[in-house]
Image (cartoon, one colour):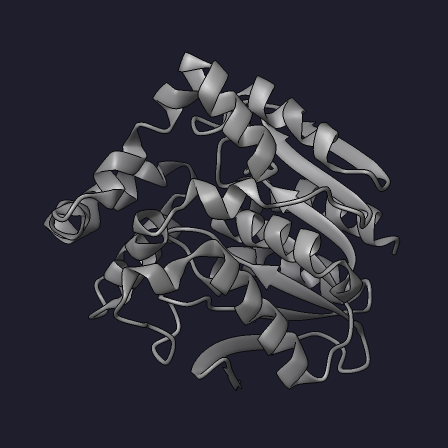
Length: 271
């Protein structure tokens, strides 16, 4: 369905029992709503109604030209606007990668809109910021972001039918090619990369303590987030908190370990 919110039109993919408890799914880069496809059958079987949002830059009707319009706080406002447009007062939220960052901001700024939060791969921004300041190893893990923020990033990432994107996502097999093809759509990759270009320490420094029941899922094979940064999230959640460390899994948890993620999310949701 197409949902209008904040002056933009978002593609929202709804599925599951129409009377089910709502779950908002927020994807990361370079994926889209499809990264959650493999966990949907389990969520729907538990009676949940899912709403997978193609976020700004990904939905064709939500691609502002100004880089500043891709601030993480604005993406969190999009989520609120979509919930409002759908008539959903409160939802469970599952976010991966950039979607996890949006989830942290959303939960901190609008706790009244969340039943629970399941954040995957990327930890609470405040803890991550501390890790980046104090741990050279975590800074090294984030070195790729300078490439993504560069003016030539589009040319690099789309060269040879998206070879770099496909290599980054090699653990998810043929699905990597699916996302690489999608990024060739005019304007989509630029919108997606603008999330990196708009990244502001000021926006993330204001993310407060999370007061809704939260599970943070990290994997020990993640090349982006190290264990110290992952463990730091506990400091920033005052509600019931669970830390789940998956073994032998990389960064693409919803597609590398869909069964494990579905069970973790359902345990947090309580069904």
